[in-house]
Length: 396
Image (cartoon, rainbow, N blue to C red; front, top):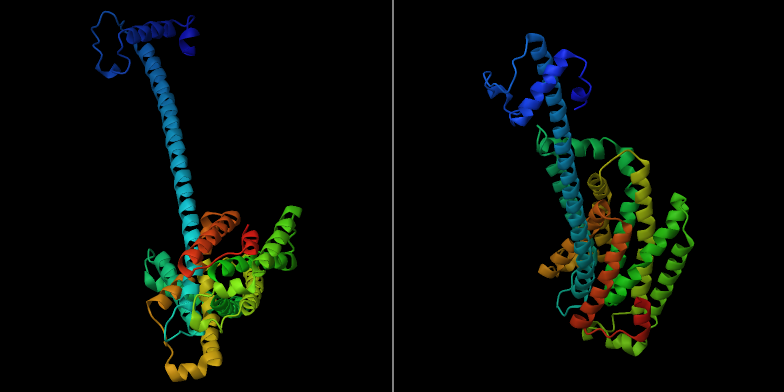
């Protein structure tokens, strides 16, 4: 102790020094309150010395407690940081695994629902309509759950929706265009899935990355590195190679005999390409809305989009399949497979948002790449798909 080393000149301090050494020698410093005052090894002190000693001990006690508290808080903070990092890493891994499985199963489900041998084939426009309804239902559940802790409970959720959707019409109108484009895009993807096997469908769908990059340059004034441009060119070449499959192999890879004449790879390719272009534009446009307007949650934005997408998708069913719906009914051909496909389609759009929250775009693209491999294996196993040399080169 510095005090003991520098206290030789003060008689009171000298007595305190002797007193402290005796206490420490008897290992009774901590139990100071229980000391026997008649102990011969501990000299009696006058009032001034006792006051000085108490002040020193109190001050040293405060310092020691502060040091111990700082050490304890440091250990708690390190443990908390370690636990948080481990928890976030677990969530990220779980989200990526889920997104990989979701993408692969989505492509296989969509293909299977369109080519299976059934007497009653559902209308794809009706499936798009119910997909939008399911997305709205999920987003409403999330909003109501987030507001359930407030004193008003569910009423707070209704008030929030009323305020951010209906009382701000200009802000809601911003999502009108991407809502319409999403409906058209989803209908085109159903058309593509009717004419392309699951693996080819997933690979061509990667043109969304190409269109998103182009529209990011146009709408968001972003610039791409040379490596990114090279990657986009390789992606485009790969998609072209996938389409260079011999005609006899295309016929061999057609799963259903009764729809062989109805399936056309060129039609599927055109539909998927247009859908990817719309997807890139609408995605970038939606991103611009999210970053350039008032802070509104992603779930609330989807509710705003549902205001336009649900009526638009219902109108599309009447325009494209109105006569067939009048003859067979709105839910014609619907069974557990179709409901699962529609639900999986809706969850897929929301899963990307969750992935971007806990992971990043690079991780999302990696998950999609793994999903393509899984979809190819699934197509070979379940649909008898036989990849050609050009397809394999395009996949790589």
